[in-house]
Length: 291
Image 1: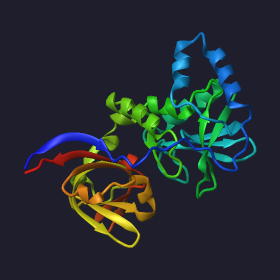
Image 2: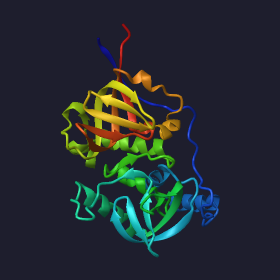
Image 3: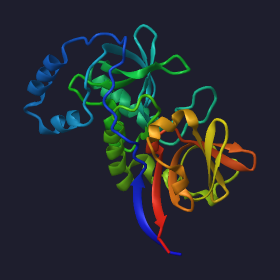
Image 4: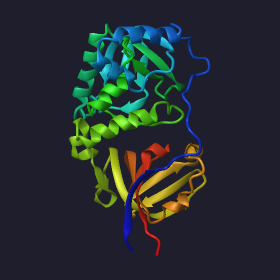
């Protein structure tokens, strides 16, 4: 049997509209007025215009002042609140006696420099889910010139995309920027851990973020999950509560197909397990040809 090479994402039915949280704070200024000021400020600098144009905010929830940078995707605000940026993940600096991950300091330094150049001010666009289980505020962050913080880190290859429902605003725009950095092998994308690994090559004690490729050898269902076995080496967990994100996609069509999944791997008995909550984390690589 031969396979025809293709790369396709799992597209849910319908499209996702931008999100505006119910109960979120009112914009610090009418957005149209803010956008007008931005246009005037950038009119003489095409490079800054291009940066600000990528994944622009559709509203602002509040203006804040950053007091401390934990790492590339988490900051502490004046007043004590912590903010976790939506849509991206950067390497961990090494809190609570954990080791510093590769390029974690580079991501943190990039963010610190941006904030130093902008008086430590950010404009936040709150997520639909406004807090995570750590109590951190979830938001997209923008500089005064309109530049989306996430886009700078993604362009540099210092962040990966991370789509966690219901906060899916900007997913397609962020993914395009990641794809460009990945193709150019910038930053993280030059490291072995961030390459696409064969499921059969994963050591049993693998932990952390990985991109894994393998053939779907079995599809199982339980009370709360759909389980995809990749080459009998990796189990992909898809919670039933997240099926709405996949629209009308029929998972049975994945049998014998080669797919690529991304996420955080944990050991699970004699296999590794990876949870997928959104179709952005699952890509069909090849489809077996018809007999």
